[in-house]
Image 1 (cartoon, rainbow, N blue to C red):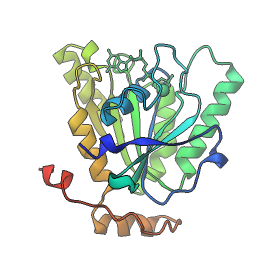
Image 2: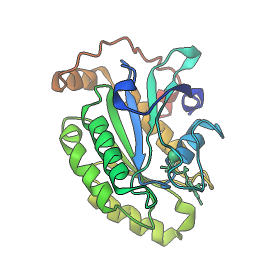
Image 3: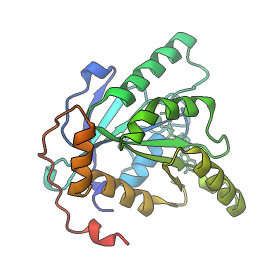
Length: 232
Ligand SMILES: Nc1nc2c(ncn2[C@@H]2O[C@H](COP(=O)(O)OP(=O)(O)OP(=O)(O)O)[C@@H](O)[C@H]2O)c(=O)[nH]1
Ligand SMILES: [Mg+2]
């Protein structure tokens, strides 16, 4: 858990070609506008203002990268992406952003995991499904995938259980978790999962390297002392 709290702002970019090349695992937070991506990052990292969260949809307009790692040594990156599907954005701007985002998800070499945030009252929408479809080849090649059902505090226990099982069926083999920033539900569980994903066992790293055309080097030696022991 403490690992997530080491998050600090790294950089921001309006376009893909402005993103720096990184050699550590990158975990992207994507989803519809207003799904709760920025709030989720703030909750996981226990920092109120790291990512800009807002009542007004469309608040995040750049790709914001945050570094994670102890003693200032970055061993993973979190990426907060602008949401899609925000009604007040012009059609051409929407399409432009959808293209940029899909391009990022499909081609960013350092991207090793995708976290799709979804308001469980809406379920997986058409745009979420399109995203799932676009990343399917990478997920099949070993990329990690997690659907976070946000704002779980808005649902009763039985609604939560129902939406969890339905989403599991539709998540294409990815993980699914309920989450509430308000009630701090699912926080430890998601943090543990992301830590494990950013620090895969050597055998998995070799597999990923053999299925990837990219040679990202191996300078991200995890300092696997504490969180690993919380695994059970
Ligand atoms: N009740 C409740 N509200 C939440 C939760 N998470 C986020 N919200 C609210 O949902 C709204 C949108 O949250 P953001 O984190 O800004 O959403 P986003 O996905 O980053 O939105 P964009 O940047 O527009 O893509 C805010 O008003 C948050 O307070 C939650 O777990 N419970
Ligand atoms: Mg946001």
